Length: 292
Image 1: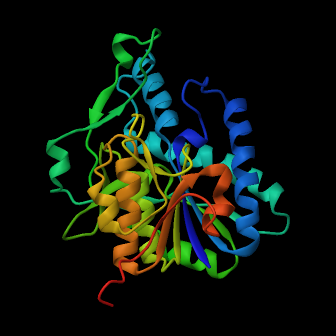
Image 2: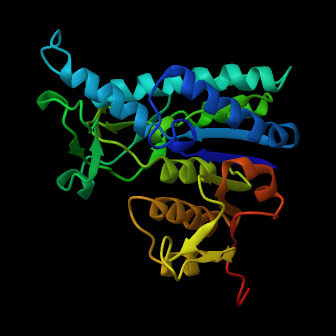
């Protein structure tokens, strides 16, 4: 079975943790342990978040007095893909002896006329007591992903038996000139779960696995009326109307993949990855077969 795994950024750097390399390495050791059993049985493509890492680099770049201007987000996003990809690749290489593992810096095509460019909604940068005037958070657009440009390369790597790490942070967002095809990086971020769903569709994956820090999807999360959702169709999942800053994109990504492919998706906790795929944990998102 071909599985695309969308790994939440908080699996790499938990909320409140110091953003140090040793901390992230320890967390990635846990990722490798959680995914090794799946990798022994299935083809895996691993995508990952980069929010904390991108915020760290953006804050440092904005506050660096040696720079006349901060580094563009596209370059910082590529840096995080390389950094996190290297940590994941080395750790998975050790956990899966003999299994080829490759990290691929990827770019995600977005539309230049996407309405999101007129409504920046995603915060980037650091906040806290050490914040300086030059390192304040700023809001950037989050356009819809249209295509991962390196999808065919991922296909070829999978066909050779390689575990592929790609589309980190949703990929570096770029637009394409309609006449020449030339690419231009844009100051934006793409939601990594929506990119993972699109990549899974284009790779003809059987399963989209969205891993986070809760055991399943909950209605009314954090309230006395909190209820687990263990099984849902895309329509049922959307009716729950999850917050846009947390479960919303994950639920939408799972719903899109199932609707467009007829495959299965699931959302759940990192440590239960194997159990989720085998139907013993998490929230399963399945096609609506009524009338079929």
